[in-house]
Image 1 (cartoon, rainbow, N blue to C red):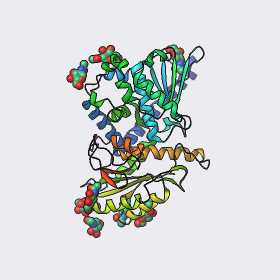
Image 2 (cartoon, rainbow, N blue to C red; image 1 turned 135 degrees about the vertical axis):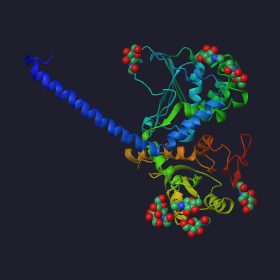
Image 3 (spheres, helix red, strand yellow; image 1 turned 90 degrees about the vertical axis):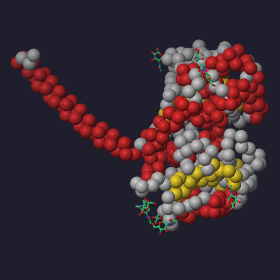
Image 4 (cartoon, protein in one colour; image 1 turned 120 degrees about the vertical axis):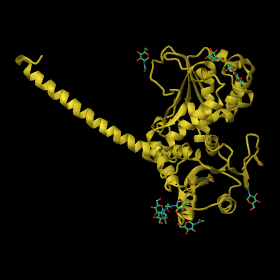
Length: 407
Ligand SMILES: *[C@@H]1O[C@H](CO)[C@@H](O)[C@H](O)[C@H]1NC(C)=O
Ligand SMILES: *[C@@H]1O[C@H](CO)[C@@H](O)[C@H](O)[C@H]1NC(C)=O
Ligand SMILES: *[C@@H]1O[C@H](CO)[C@@H](O)[C@H](O)[C@H]1NC(C)=O
Ligand SMILES: *[C@@H]1O[C@H](CO)[C@@H](O)[C@H](O)[C@H]1NC(C)=O
Ligand SMILES: *[C@@H]1O[C@H](CO)[C@@H](O)[C@H](O)[C@H]1NC(C)=O
Ligand SMILES: *[C@@H]1O[C@H](CO)[C@@H](O)[C@H](O)[C@H]1NC(C)=O
Ligand SMILES: *[C@@H]1O[C@H](CO)[C@@H](O)[C@H](O)[C@H]1NC(C)=O
Ligand SMILES: *[C@@H]1O[C@H](CO)[C@@H](O)[C@H](O)[C@H]1NC(C)=O
């Protein structure tokens, strides 16, 4: 092939092949190296796979092909969970997302999540078994229904009644795309709506499981997987539990949400929480066995509380937390730079994943830690689970009711 005539190009070809060969070799060596690094640290990733495996077993009777069905056409009808401003904290958003997802499943529409606020969600969470990433398509000639039911109390109530007890699918069928802003539970009422029973039956969810609280762990895992940033952040923390090869340390977690404070100047004031910090510390010191085999993890909405807890257990090298600025992802003071919004959101998501791995979890009343506690599948959802509600109470199971409504 390499005649004189083509010598120039031939030489070029030889060099090219040689270069490709060397690059491939370097790349291989590099990825072997990278795999080794990842291998020693993919603690969270392993836990997520294990959890999904358990969930698949527990919900093996559920019609997964229906849950995961997603039309491949980008022209198909859709439902989008939309969060561009005023959509609540991470707890509210998870409620809204899983609600909207179920509505998409029941209407066999494509499901998207549109959340660039306070920083693009896909930097931290990526689709797991269901691809919800929004795509650009030609929206002319398409009819869109906008439902904005997060803030307005009356609208919220109306929407809830509609989902509970009307055949809203008839109205919705006129629209190509439906955009929903909500922080409400529509999972429970939609599954109980008598007009939807023909479709609901296909899902084959048992009646006891037909609530948002019960289905949350499954729906969350179907939708989300942490992006590399989050994996690294959480692994760096979890690896500290394994630094003594002979014993795995117990992870004791505190979520201390006090409400409006110098760190969160725009947050709402929360009552009955004046002595929460002292009460929680006293509980940890008196009721829990704190020894060299336990670590205390803290996440809080107050920089001061966060530091106080870190200092208190730092003398014995037992306190850990995810680094980063403490922000409320919805009540953004204009003081945050766009970089802080992103690192703050990264911390929120990372904290959420850590809370799912706690051997003992003490929560303030908050959707954030409540949803996180539902992910404690590998430990047991109700294993050593406590709630601060004008005092500390142990949550014993799904039926447990907190002693006060406001706390
Ligand atoms: C539906 O779920 C029940 C358990 O709740 C199970 O016995 C049954 O086999 C399931 N049906 C299908 C078609 O998978
Ligand atoms: C699962 O759902 C699909 C609809 O997506 C339906 O065609 C199928 O019959 C269902 N399977 C069972 C066992 O009910
Ligand atoms: C939408 O689908 C059409 C046809 O399948 C394809 O040509 C187009 O690139 C798709 N658009 C996007 C944004 O995926
Ligand atoms: C590891 O834990 C064991 C059992 O508690 C203890 O005896 C040993 O000293 C620990 N090793 C280190 C390096 O801390
Ligand atoms: C923890 O370990 C230190 C030495 O590393 C030891 O002095 C101390 O007594 C241990 N505390 C408990 C509660 O085991
Ligand atoms: C904990 O104490 C060590 C010294 O023992 C110090 O270097 C470190 O900064 C402290 N960490 C925190 C979070 O206060
Ligand atoms: C605290 O932990 C760090 C890293 O986990 C270790 O390097 C250091 O020696 C520990 N200090 C004490 C006092 O145990
Ligand atoms: C904590 O311990 C005290 C006794 O020391 C006990 O009365 C209380 O019930 C315990 N709290 C919980 C939530 O177990």
